[in-house]
Length: 623
Image (cartoon, rainbow, N blue to C red; front, side, top):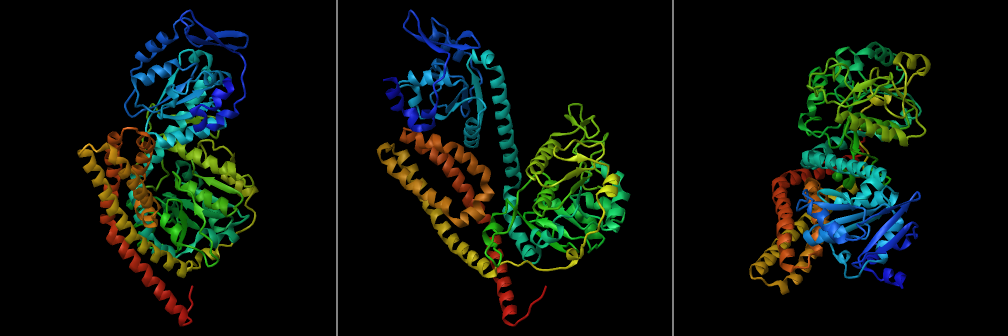
């Protein structure tokens, strides 16, 4: 009978994976003199009460009354459910707070589910996730989905679980902390760059069409050949003469990242290419020395979302890579064979961008130079770097293991770059990575060798760099480009109509709210839902507008479930006006601000495509 009751429970309809739970052992339900149930858990031969055996409800009331940190917008995660007394009491006091539960013990969860009443608190629509096992793969996936949806998290462990499941709670908190930190980092990046990425993509597309794809052009030449990624860490100063020897004898491909090109140029060493990808307008300062000296023999390998003035006056050859934040290029560009361009994931460091490229191109080995990811005394950058003051060392600066076995001082940005680099190194199983950075941080997956030793033992042959000096345009399908652009122009007209319709739908909801017409609001909600869905599916919106409002949409997305599940039409209408209305208004204003730039971009692409078509008709072909 209990099993049938379980299968009919609403919790199973929402989370059907719970039906797959295996019955656990070591749980016993006791009944007090007051006819209140409590639960005893046996672990390693010891029995533990998960509730006060005589007054479990009163215990829960006292526990919840002591909670002081519950904010209105917080999402609460209950670690440990027992029989749920504390969660019932919490929801009685905070009925509008969304929540999830984590139960580390399968047996406890089974007992809990068997005693759950259909009219109990779990029928509450505020529940987001139910997780069984504190650090299982299923819990990890559920937690990822949850963190993406909510705007703040408060973990509340039930009292006995703090001592019974100490290790599990610690691992769960660490896992949660990493996910929340990752989301904060992503949100911070989006907040700074979301407006820049889309406009940079439009500004840079002409340069993409007039340059070659680095990955496509270079793969056959770089595959199986040694390649150096030279960064601007302070240890770069130690390797100048070694790098000069490598470059003069073409012993390996030598690519600089970021400001390292300045140090090499100061010493008369011109790398085979330099990578640049930062979306900020001041990114041009990184290569200003090359521009000022009119050096035309160093190819600039640029990310498609690079700062909009980086490319305007560069004297040398341009080669491009398409960055994952570039929605526009991914939509417009196809090779003559119909393939999408290869995409390189956005990263916290240009060195990670270069690493991804060389892994894709199958360079081997890949040698890291000047990649300290740590301070060297008070030094942050190599000599010759003038465009960044760096981050000062403080007494609270973290420490990590160094390549010589010592602890080295670092900072949180370096640690983030290090982890990202280690991630890509770890998945490139067939590639050898050598770290030559003296007094730098250990980078997992690399072996440490002095650069002099690498020259003597690994760099025996010579590479052919002639392909890097041969200028050529990209080979993208211009008919496809033009047809996609025409589709976007038509979608822009539809977008304008949808925005106007959304505006009127919101005014309709506002009017009915003012008149307290709760019974008529549901029809308006349905109409608005359809219109908003049309907006989200509009291609023009997805390419030009939404990428500039990632933060706003993520915040709106975190509110959607609560808004949709609200049973009070008046409350739901007010939330729609507040959250959806604000998002749509900001999108509308932003579109009006960039509309002229978009139309200027259209004119350029059509002119370019027409010019190439006429040249082809005349039989003119040039590289």
